Image (cartoon, rainbow, N blue to C red; front, side, top):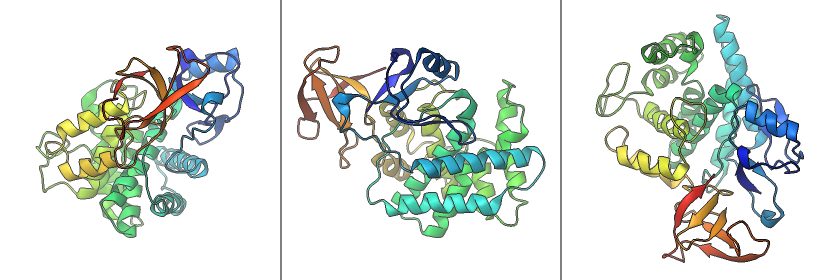
Length: 343
């Protein structure tokens, strides 16, 4: 399979990855043949990229960090939890912890992890999809930092609930200062929960703080911010920049990696950022790229030792020729580099 822009879809393309709603319900299943009606619907939903099957890439597997069932369960429990908060009821903590336990267990079980799939998001599931992704990314970083199982579960719960304060705000408002209150609102709500570790409330409170004191709400500095909140902050930053429908303009993973390296040691701890980037594929599997040779190809595999140097399969013609000519393993071919990611 390969990644493609919704604007480049043609009738008859076959969906390569399932698309979920905000509650975890399947909107379109993997293997569905796209019609003009489906394509129009995808555009209306605000989806900009997705994965399609392509016989030239039958052997290319784009893997998520967690399986579809666990991601769907996480979306579902998050939707239930936010509904409870809106109604002034208690969170479904037992169910939430069960879902988080499955995610943490799956990530711990995997020997090598490289985040190489770009999330497919619609306008309606942006908030939930973002929270689940921040949970996954935070847990991956926590594992890389050798956190024990108990801390990982606390981190993962704090990550999935880091934006819970937004539920109590009118998000139709464009007022930035009002939106910033979500950290305090989340803290006030979560600290009352006796069945949740207090650190979880502090993650919600501190995930927008920066080491140099430029963050909010309390302008904390290095040494004053809880390490688990710093992990969530890095995951939150990366996911916002690489996804649609957030306040930021979407950029590609390799660009987000460059931005993160630029602010490491100033906004976020340098070693945390380094460990995070070791687990991120700068050029995710399935993306179409142009090389410095002028050739166009698709990223078909990753090098765990050097995430910024993937394997690219190229073709005879600029417009995807039918016959595969060669593959470049960019760890071995040091003079070959990716010039541009194509939409």
